[in-house]
Image 1 (cartoon, one colour):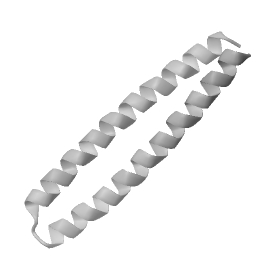
Image 2 (tube, rainbow, N blue to C red; image 1 turned 180 degrees about the vertical axis):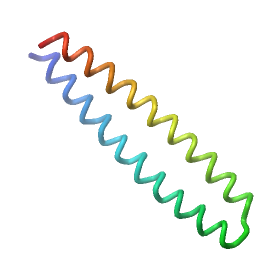
Image 3 (cartoon, helix red, strand yellow; image 1 turned 45 degrees about the horizontal axis):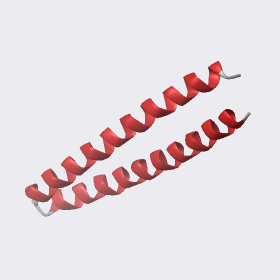
Image 4 (cartoon, rainbow, N blue to C red; image 1 turned 180 degrees about the horizontal axis):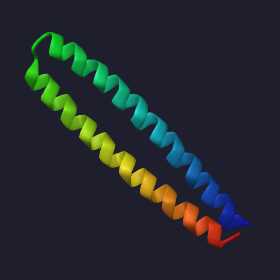
Length: 76
């Protein structure tokens, strides 16, 4: 039972992280639109690079969630 509780806590933490990453990407996309209106291509490039970093974090979070899901299913 203790392992199941720990897995659930970790899953919830990963979900919160995922929500944060997605909200941040949404804000970054809005920033890109504003920079495009100002022809700030360097800013667009740098912001796009930061979105890539968040996308990688999302991938890692999803892989961790899948691992926990698989591991949690074995313990049922």
